[in-house]
Image (tube, rainbow, N blue to C red; front, side, top):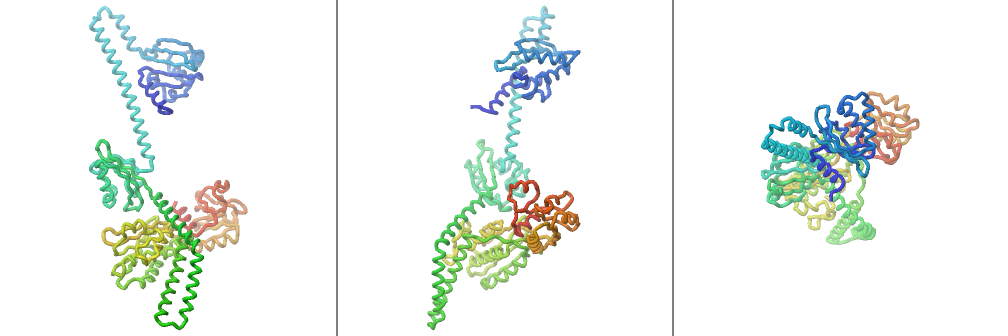
Length: 625
């Protein structure tokens, strides 16, 4: 069944194949349907051949152009023809146009109202008739026969040309629509030949593989995506070239983004069609849901057993502590100490399970990450084996970054200790590398141990999963994963590849603290004091104003970099401080999103309460726009 636009397209294509001009007007004297010959034959502009065009406008255009010969009163000529149309009667007429062309015009009313008119170019026919009348006595029967055959061939050729023109129009429109659709799809669509060379691309490759070029037709997959990615893709591409469809996921070696790729063999044997989509967010949500379910399980375990377990541990600690002070043999004292150590470890484990079940919030503050990592490495070195080397390579400036120092230290320390356990007391090297990889603070911890097993790469961040044969809690990497996600970052585990060893890449949002002069506008004295302390703690200088009037007198100071103002001030709106020539303005409010006043001010709005990290991120965004 053909419905909607498909039926209209079908009808239009059919009408365009007819060699005569056709027009249909409705009862309101407006054009309902016309084929392409209607415009071509009468020489009408586009606006007069579209559905809805008025009959009066078309007639006026033809009268003014001289289509009906000289007119003493053009308006009267138009009026007469419109009135005739309103009382339309069936008719057939032949008339000669101003350019000498002869037209046969046949019209008939429609039962629904309106009428249909067919225009036929009979110029050749009239010339032939005239020629036959003038020279019929000298034309032989053979000449007439040739003339008839020629006329038939001409009519057939004209019909073929019309059909080809309509086919060309449909194909051109279809190609344009197809290209537009493929360019709008949030995926990379491509066609590759058997030599791994791109034959077609919708230009969306940089959206899926960041940093790549969009003009890739004629290049090979290896040239475009790099040797590392091609090494992963090759076996899938070869399977697809052999006729087997492939659907798989891979991580981009450069950006770390997770890509899902579908390969479909070309039925004509000319290569493979490729559909690539970025599923990084989907994978992160999937992992987050998995970890959320683990945390939910841990929460249930904790809520159901923590109270009783805690009481038991308290009793055990009390009894063992009493025994440790008693006069016991040395071997018994060592047993008591071992029991105490095991009990204290149980207390720590219970506390860590609670952290997994309900992770704390992130409190960012200005931190010089380089010295923090140096202190952490100095603290961690004594816990390593005598033949283990811990090296720090820090490629960061002295600019403070907004991070949670406690969480960052916990995460890196967990990764260092995990690397230490992987070395299992054997000589080896642990490296901590830190650098700015916009928009990330990237910290990579590598070791020279045996690396992750395939199972560990899949499950290492799951709570309670461990490969330490009962010696580990299985919560270290899970805590790193949770804390990193909570801070808006990512944790990626892999093996080094070129040499034995494991690699953990931790990425956190890169929020540098660049000291600015801030104009703080807040009419609540206590809140203004809190905000001033927050800003100065971030390293900024602060100029204060309690009213809109005071702020206007200070806003044009050349040292002011950003205006931080409440929306509702006692004597006006903070949004009135925003000007195209002045410093950028960040507005604050406790009004919820969607409130009419909040929506009316526009610009950047921070919802109260907010922390220093959110404020620093907002400053960076408005200053870099």
